[in-house]
Length: 383
Image (cartoon, rainbow, N blue to C red; front, side, top):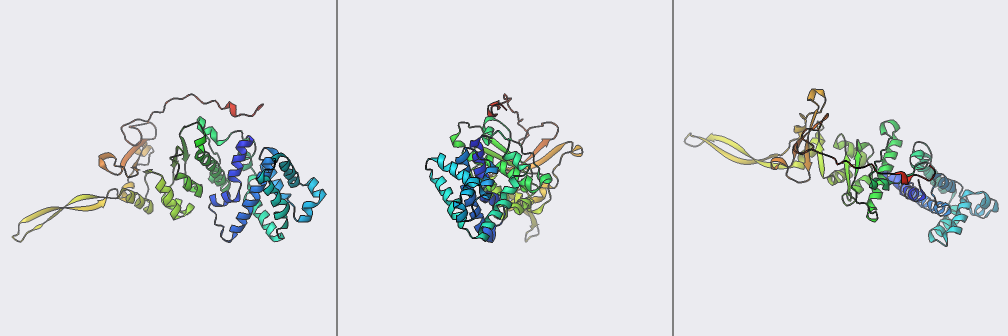
């Protein structure tokens, strides 16, 4: 990856704030260590980038690990000659032309960090190492994000497709981080796309989203439409999302996803959520009785009923040979009235062929053929 792309990638992800908050960890009393490591990483990134015009993870880790342990060491000629931290700082100062951020980074490593009490210094270094450095120096994350990649997320705006082949079921926590990093990099790129000439819409297709849902995903959905991004997030049921980010963020995330599809399920909370989305409607109720003279009477009284009761999903088709490869579901689009003036519409998808199209059963979905974009310009010279 070129230095510009890697710079943005690393600045976006390597700080402890991103890793801790995005992976939904509760820091509690450790909040002060998160802030301390954020500060250290910020200065290390500044030093390495100004010194090398690149941003390699190994260089950043070397700067942190070779930082002076006390003021005497910071002034020791031997340390200044042999330490990677001292070498990078000297190079950054010489090449920065008086850049204020470089001066702040130099002051941090040679004065502030050097006088930290030993226990504080050890806690900060341990948090940095265990929180991100160790994970990202190992494969597959190092190779995926900090080694031989030669693209930046902007490639999506030229029509490329980025696929994260690091399933959570196989890689567990590493899979969660890999999927989260790639998605977060795309989201941040899209939030900056106002400065990019391309107006191409982008889609994030996200199966089993409950396994990798981050707090940053919830925030992004609030402005996804202005970033020209459609998010297709698939989950098993509502409680799975709640377990990932809590009830409040789950409500916010689902609220920002305007179009919702419900398939066959018997999970009570998910069915009740669908029912609340559709609300109630007035239906006439016939009542029969007798008057004082004994004659039969009948009247019609409007009552409120659920427009789409939770149990309606129980009998939906789930595809396969036994269902003639048909999958049925309910479509809800915000507060729009759909077929027959209902707040929902039953849809049918054929697993083997397109029958009736998505959503309406009337219109076919046809994608225009486009020439394959040429991405060779992104390759490094001589590669």
